[in-house]
Each structure stands twice: as structure tokens, then as C-alpha cells.
Image (cartoon, rainbow, N blue to C red):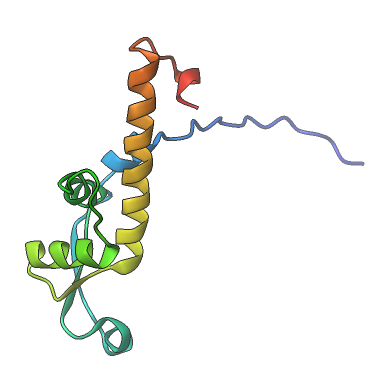
Length: 120
């Protein structure tokens, strides 16, 4: 016979896009490319930039103009003195930055008295 036991569950609150944008997670990092990674990304070093760095580059683009992920990667690599920037994390951080900007725009329209429930 099995006896049911009660377990306490923690409820995790979902991070907002703006909170995700602020979370640097020990970034930026410079990584030396090994032979396997070098086949696709080239030789030398690769920077894994922080989300705020990608956001800063995107914010400098004038309204009505376009910047590609490759252009963002080149700017990040130049800034950090690396040969390239990680295409995967740069794309993810651009997505986070875009959603954070949209979230900020939506919050400005709703006023300053936001509760935790209003974040979702």
C-alpha cells in the first residue's frame, strides 16, 4: 500500500523581458575557437556578449533603418577585439531586446501603478 505524502512546491515567477535583458550571467566572455568550431566560425577568438550590449547596438539604429544580426556580430567582435561573435547568443539577445522594448512601450501606455499580476 502506498501512502501519499505532501510535498511543498515553489511557485516560480516568470521573468519579464526587461529582467531577462538585465541578466548578464557573467557575460561578456571571450572563447578561443577550437578546430571543430573553427570550421564554421573561423580561427581565433569568439565573444559571447551580454544582452545589454546587443540592446545598446540595436538602440543606436535610427528609426526606419535596419541592422542585421551579422552587422551586430561584427560590431561586438570589434568592440571586444575578437575575430567573431557568437551567432546563436547574439540572435537570442536581439530577440530579448526587441521583446523588452515592446514590453516597455506597453507599460508606458498603462501607467505607473503596475502590480506583479500586470506583468503577464
